Length: 616
Image (cartoon, rainbow, N blue to C red; front, side):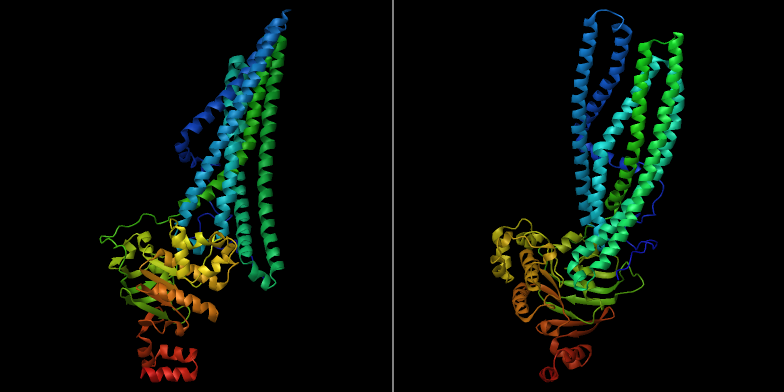
């Protein structure tokens, strides 16, 4: 049975701050959106046109009540129909102008919102791709993807509609209040006294809406992350008949998200009801007083009509703001989630080594007294004083039981985890004080679990060299013994493989990984169980490609199958996070230690005896 997430446990080290549904400090309702303001700077032209359109639409709307007052006070009291006609023509012209400015407002504001969200997505994704390994160890890819898609869409919706409506209604409200004072200062003073009664619920309920909207978004992200995992591992799930359990688990997560969304909607509905009741209740009271002023002769019918229209504009604007405020608060929660990704330290302040790394590197690797524990288990030391060296062009094999620290050495060489004690150097340069991009530029990796992306064969091979020509990609594939099967595909190198390369066999994926390494042409090669899970035919093809790739390169090989490392220049036996034996295959067999016992387990008795006799 697939267990549910522990919703109360503390997030592991490296987890996104505030990603838990119940976490987060109280902040102003739209504080998250204020951080979008710096993104406006490169688009000042769009912003200017948007503001001009907003202001023009608001001023035209505010001019309409004045025209109505003059027509009532002057037009209907005359028998000249021409005067009335001219006023109606003027109202028609204002309506057309309002339509044009409103269309411009929608276009410029929508375009600006799309541009800002696109920039934010790109900027956030760029930072995510540079985050250290410990971040991805502690966070699910589905949650990260949800922030880049669903949360960004929520922000875009707010900027395109809510922000435009909020700005327009704010201008209308302020302008209407000013004109109300011009029309009747006494009635306006009474109206102004009611405004705090309207603003207070907006502030108080807005905080609640933001908090509950954030909870709904977090719980939806949990469901999305689980769905991504199940879809990516669909074959394993189906092989174990786990469809029902997965569906039940997903239904629980979605139901939790639904309840959170309903709580947020309830708060927004209550906010809207309270605000509208207070707004229009105040308008009715003020108009009652105005009607008595009209009867007493202290206010003209046109002035009362003008005041009435401005009151309706101000009330309608405030009422719309109450609804928009809830949507902006919800978008603020989405902005917070995105900015949490953007605020994650990617370690991009690249250090500069006092000794520049030569290019291409000679490939001399030196490791001294290396101690390391993973961030998720700081009390469990994986490497405990490991020391080793590799000469340029030498092939060194690492053997040992699972969990002895072999793959961890590769992770540290590639700079995935900088928090270790001891020293790792490449050509005499400490990799911890050298730019990680420079170190990785000199290393090619062929892993056991090859990652193939859902794109073309050519793009997969050219991952490390996107500027490589078609001829170079084809040559790399030929060297990796992959050109044959690629040529048989319907579109050749332009064939799009399925997600994680599931449409390819294990041997084909491994040969693509070798082709990547061939194309990169790095002086240092790391092979992590590159042929461990292959059948005999594929292993032979892959091994031929590897033999060509290893030629004249510094190579470190991780292998559990000793038959694959018999030709290594040296073999290091690792146990408990340190090197316990070192030597050639023959020398280690003569020693009769851990390596010799491993050889006896893997080779049959006759072969093992022959090996020992040959070593003697």
